[in-house]
Image 1: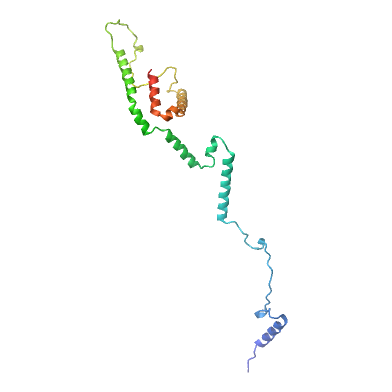
Image 2: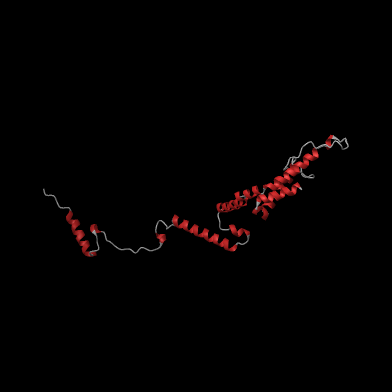
Length: 210
């Protein structure tokens, strides 16, 4: 018994189809046709997104444009620090504070001129010692012990004026703190103190001794 060829019918059908459709028909009887795909991005599954680098560049550009706008619009005292970061502002303020501090040259000049201050302190101490001496020829007068000041005034000390707020209570301490801050700001803004701090302190001590 002879086996029959099973591919004869398939080969005949494929040959017939190729004759009908022409050379565009591919193998296995599949027809290749070209389709025009639309250029609409919505036709794709994944939409085009902005990259991280592009986002970063856009943020930097907007930030720089805002800073330039603020610096051009603002004026006055605040214009000096517009468009500057907080750390640089702190560094500038620290530099200004360092400039207000006394320098070594000021210290040397003050040490050279210290003789005048020493002479004033010595004279004041001599006057206080002479006041403490008792003159035997003078008349003796009995005085209450409360009127005698037992504490000796040391040279270089500052006399405390009366009618001042008491630091022991809360209200007086607040008043003294407010007065001290106001006086400190006034001293820092003084031009003489900025030029020669030790010289200004020496003049203040002279005035207090008079």
